[in-house]
Image 1 (spheres, rainbow over the protein chains, first blue to last red):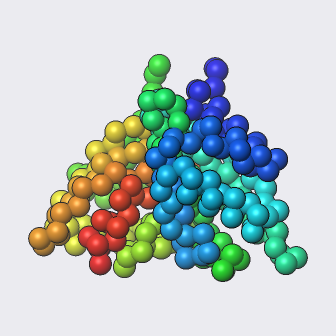
Image 2: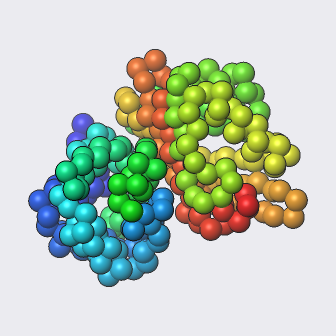
Length: 130
Length: 131
């Protein structure tokens, strides 16, 4: 079965993240994109608009690197995508491996319009990054 | 395209939840299931084990007079995962809730839920409703 175009978008974003090519995200985000980061850590909160989301992603990749994600599954329909992935972070000699579930809304142009990040062990994630 | 069996599973589970058929609903969960409720309100957090999760469902039922409804708009699934975008409405005293929840499930080969995440499009509204 051919992969749904919306799944392809998310897979390309994951590859871009792992190779540090943040510019790739700009073409996949809608101009009014909204991203919600759960928990109580330095990234938590809601970012509204493509520029704000790009700033947040830059902060995440620069301040929190090296971070690597391994996609476990991507589910897609015409309006939504949900990706499940391991987020593996190294920081001060410690390693954290959490599973993130990331639901997203996709607009009619196939751009990512809204997304949520939540970890399966949000407390460990918050402690690691606080 | 035929619906994936795990999409059917989620649809049935939500229907049992809406009808308050707890005994049948319990069958959809592993004993050591983990349930993550997002947001920043008294019900937010991680629930570990089926018993803990059903205490949470009972709390939700008691607080809303059994009137919380979930209407799936889009269900996505593969062999080990499921996701649903569902409109959730509820009333609690004079408060009204009407949000879309994004729910993600991990599903084992026996067709039981092992892990779950829930997030709202309007988390502030959810936080205010439960606080």
